Length: 145
Image (cartoon, rainbow, N blue to C red; front, side, top):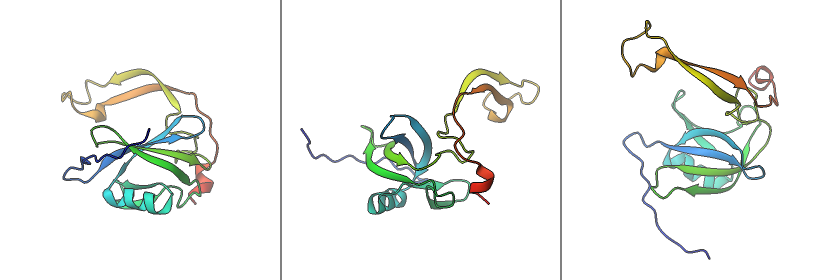
């Protein structure tokens, strides 16, 4: 049974909320990115995933450069209105490093370099040992020439 409701979206001063991209066929989590109200509107309007790049400070269409677009089956919002789930049909790899998913590594250990920083909240002094378990599906040097 489908019913209509209204959810207050919890955009804060930055106007950014996380959006998780999930493959509609496999259920695999492909990536996490951030969205603005404009990115959500463009996604709903075009049927293609749009996100907000914090590093470039701009709206972007997933696959705009690489051609590895995400066709959006639907957009869901969580109960708190502070996270989106894009259920997508992914063309090519989702990860800009060439992997099918951005979550292509398992975490083996976390290392904190105590000499590097005495501040326990300093993330630059933390590294991780990982094992690659995902599949590389494209060459990023060719896709982002």
